[in-house]
Image 1 (cartoon, rainbow, N blue to C red):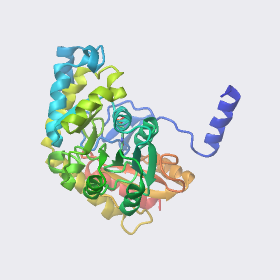
Image 2: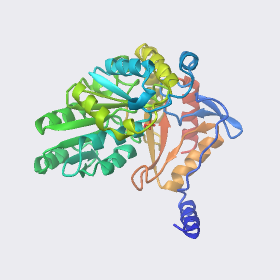
Image 3: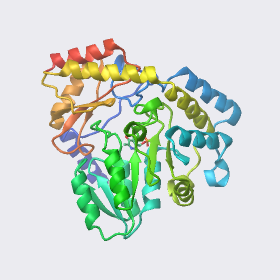
Amino acid sequence: MSFTRLAAELEALRGESRLRRRRMLESPCAAEVLAEGAWRVNFAANDYLGLANHPALAAAAQAGIARWGVGAGASHLVSGHTAAHEALEQELAQFVGMDAALYFSAGYMANLGILPALAGRGDALFADRLNHASLIDAQQLSLATVRRYPHGDLAALTRLLESTPAKDRVIATDAVFSMDGDIAPLAELAELARRYDAWLVVDDAHGLGVLGPQGRGSLAHCGVADPRIVYMGTLGKAAGVHGAFVAGHALFVEWLLQRARTYIFTTAAPPLLAEAVRASIQLMRAGDALRARLAEHIAALRAGLAGTRWQLLPSDTAIQPVIVGTDAAAVELSAALWQRGLWVPAIRPPTVPEGTARLRISLSAAHTAEHLQSLIAALVALQ
Ligand SMILES: *Cc1c(COP(=O)(O)O)cnc(C)c1O
């Protein structure tokens, strides 16, 4: 691409209201943040339990620095795998009820590691149409034949599984869809995986810590367990730290250790982060009060917007999207809320399908009832 072309493309994005920009924070992630000169209520983070700035996690990270320093110095398979990483992997596996787990430096990296390790040329990969971008990129990297099924459409998926000539099959799905907030039919997907001898890859970026007894995630929430399930949980959202993990059957995890290029060819995450995540598991386990507060906020928002122009998508999770329609209208609404001290991001294509630009309201246990009431009042005023 020439510079002239770059400038023209950027100008075109600006014209379509699709130029992305970053807003800079001058305070830690919390329910209220100092951003661009004013304090705003933050409905834009994935810190669903309010742990990102929790003193116990900060203390664990500091103790981790005191013990381990900062850098891991090498990849896990060379010399970067510390006792902190090892303990974390065991604790994560136990938390989600799986044999074993590997700690990746990001959910994006974990997904890019999983799919190519499970499927290659000639294999078939079945993916929900609304899967996260990292799963979509991972599909392409795998070189498998990709069949995307309409969102949550089990009948369509069944037809695809029925007709595939491929011997090795993988179904991949978000557990909680990141831009819609709904939960995948995990029990039915696990049943299809059994019936058609497929792996089921479950991306639980938005369920871990939030759903299930003790916050053990979407599988526990749906009461689903199966050796052919590969579970991916991220640790930078409800867990409040950074990184991700993949858990599953012992043989699969051993295979991943041999084959996941995004685990093998990258420096291990700083052990201080592993220590912080270990502390986070304790807080998530003991976080029933946080999950109860989050549930109250979800109920308050849904009740407060009922009967208004702003129709929330059906969602029982911390992700509460309001479909606005055009990109410009979504951006305008988000800007009007911003002016009122409320930070609610507008999500536009290509992140979501054309014509479904939306506000993505992210709720957190860190919010107060007053934060919710001010958001509801502002949306009512902006109808
Ligand atoms: C955020 C997210 C990821 C990526 O996780 P990171 O740790 O932020 O890289 C993967 N899948 C889904 C569904 C997500 O929402």
